[in-house]
Image 1 (cartoon, rainbow, N blue to C red):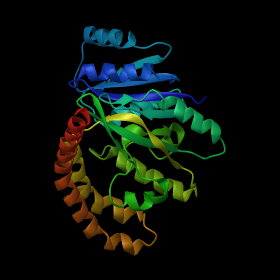
Image 2: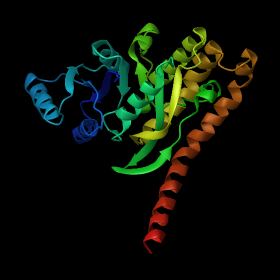
Image 3: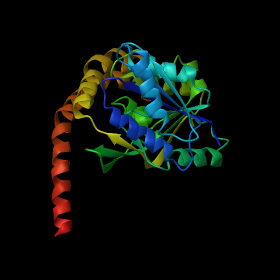
Length: 288
């Protein structure tokens, strides 16, 4: 069995109930991880408050080592890098405090690794199920590794919370960089380039079933997409990494990719609302 650290950055003003539900979903795994590292971030916290947090969270888990660290007004990148540096395990499993693991997430990863021991795996990601008002929604399909070079040239095709990554490899490329909203996207881009340099075609693997329930935040998603399309894509991603087969294509694609991102940004909240209405009507029809 592989050794796994679950890394959870937690902003102190976020919902503590969501964090507890997240911890419970980890504790309910068929196969449990070796440790959980939570980095509480946002403001200075008194010793009394720290003790209260530590006690309430440790009461939720059994047979898993829980370590909690505290930062003052730091970025999510610094919180995640602290998780990586403090981890005693080979693999890091990413979670957000408002998401939930499906009960087979750790066991599915372990089974895959045991069956593919010769595979030079660096990143393992899965499909996800959306979480809407505490209830499971539809499946959000992620990109196949075969088309990552194309997808990475358009948007971020790998959802951060669906990922297991090899700790030592992430350390080799410098861990997370402090780029707000796109710290994960930046990491995948650098890792993809590193995999190409090492000629590792097995670095990225997708599990074809959902393993995580992901809490959709439309406002945050819209802000992130806007940042990617306007400030990040043309200045960093396409010009520096040349992900497409021919470098000239990356230059030609700059304009249509930005147009595509803007259109997607505009229609995504509308399409999500339509999806919720249709799903509600379907439930009514089914009941009748």
